[in-house]
Length: 112
Image (cartoon, rainbow, N blue to C red; front, side):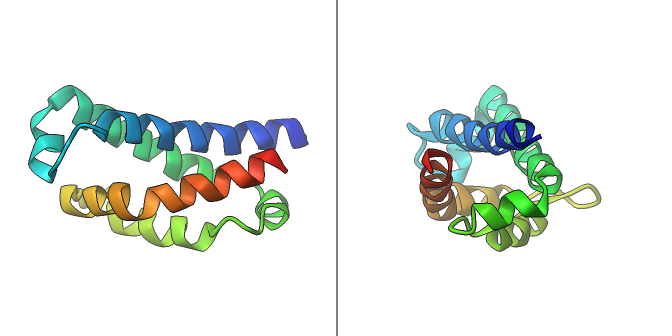
């Protein structure tokens, strides 16, 4: 059971890594959205992040209490909505300002 839960956390972490890799040479929202393949891959990995966040059990989130799980949930609702679609400006901001810290938190949690 714990192995399965750790795999979910690792999948979330890998989705962040992929998004950062796709955007590492980009300088703006326009760069991100004008590269259709990268833009689609970024959106898909955001869906993975959102899905894994809902699937990770509360006990695991408590065990990895150095990770700011609330921020993920808060940002997820700002970025992704089935009804409203994806907001490129919010996604860009999250990638550049919030994902690095979250990635670091996950790295530390996965090492412990």
